[in-house]
Image (cartoon, rainbow, N blue to C red; front, top):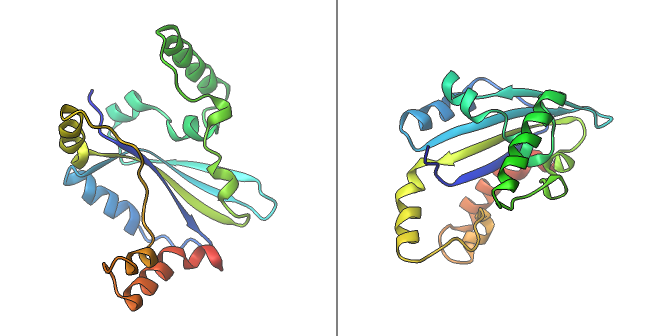
Length: 180
């Protein structure tokens, strides 16, 4: 199976007020074939920092079986317990035997540390279907990805893409919950 560029998005919630809007939007994107949610976790961290995890996904059953729990592997969170760790170790050993080098437990992303106590987060591992033709065209031209990242709305004022009022409004919407 060919896979498009994949991104891990971590969204924080001080006081989650879910009404199904996020899942509806992910379903809309899936139906348009723009993105596919490979894996999704909801993480709640209580006041003492204890973590509770729920697995979410809009994958079909076949896709879920094929892909398994991937976010847990990226961030070093053993969702499936000992059995899941064994499966991951076997897959990693097989890849290493073929000479493939990739991140290990020491390099796993510590996004759980970034989640404040007494809050929640949604971790979404998203495949960008829309970017596959662009990625392939860049590769055919001899190009490769050097870096990527989201740009703050405030930074867009400096290049004239947004006016200050619009940028402040978007910045507040994107980051206000994290500062409360």
